[in-house]
Length: 298
Image 1 (cartoon, rainbow, N blue to C red):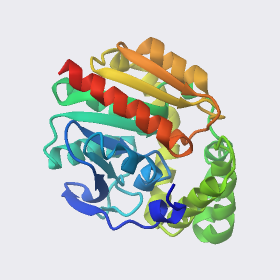
Image 2 (image 1 turned 90 degrees about the horizontal axis):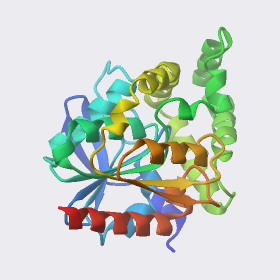
Image 3 (image 1 turned 90 degrees about the vertical axis):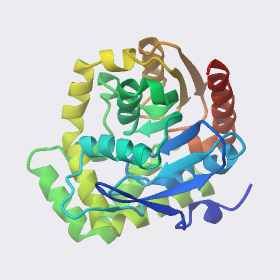
Image 4 (image 1 turned 180 degrees about the horizontal axis):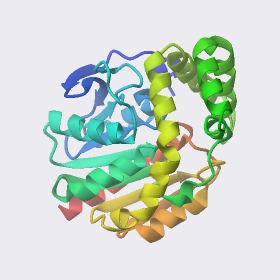
């Protein structure tokens, strides 16, 4: 296996202009359908640094940094939130002229991937969900996010994170992200440092995270009221899950399996939240086989 630094160092990548800003993305592989890899928060496209090269023989892959994260540059004054993620996804796909897509959604991008697939059935070849959520199946919120919602305490903590980001934020980020790995290794430590350092240096990313966390309970409630949306999915859906995720446990994956028609579940028991990192080869094999089945149905 190649070194961690090779995969997670700041990438050169490519840039594309969207209505909401300049989107940085990584591209690898060729052939259809195009696999669009969506990172969760507060990470960026480098979370697919191990998986994307493994998929290069399967199809073309695009891994964007969502606006506000990583190396993308949102327009000045852009309002960050879940609607922004939905628009960013739609703009990115349209800007590339994609009409044959397999979407891979991780964590907070799972709902956006589901909604886009339902709204664009003729352009969606398949959907892959990695340790994600939709409605109340995600009710167990990480402690760091809970703290940001405590009346009076939350706003003070947010301001302190902005002023003392090198100390308070760094420790909080490392503590929270460190809880979601199935096992602590050099790889997990390196990735935690990579995202912590990038995020701590970006006022835009901190602003985006504050807006996202503030809107999370309302978004989960809204999703719960519209459970008919994932039930409307008509494309093949693959659910790949790290079984040792402390917040999005296997019961969430099984709820998705019951809710989404034409879905299948692969549970990888000994890894955590970042299943695409801890079990990159297994996930790549599963997605590669899934894409082949989607091609056969075309």
